[in-house]
Length: 109
Image (cartoon, rainbow, N blue to C red; front, side, top):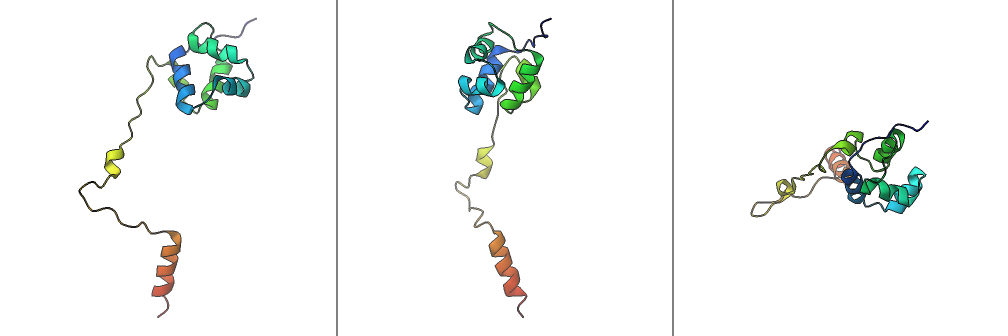
């Protein structure tokens, strides 16, 4: 009896692999399948089993549900919030050694 197939979105499989910077051959090795199988999943020629899809999501560090989305999620990183263009910067960030030195100097009275 064949295992049930996960009707995942092939485009999302390809996106997740590229987003993580993983080669199809390396992913195939990690999943214990041939590189042709991974390429077949990404083209939609084949579908992984639910167990394979679950392992694929874990190997690529994506949520299992992402594999069923129609479009890849858009990741927006708020870099502009950290820029100091035209404003004074945050200044030096205290490190643990700076904090220890400050504490030692203030407690030597």
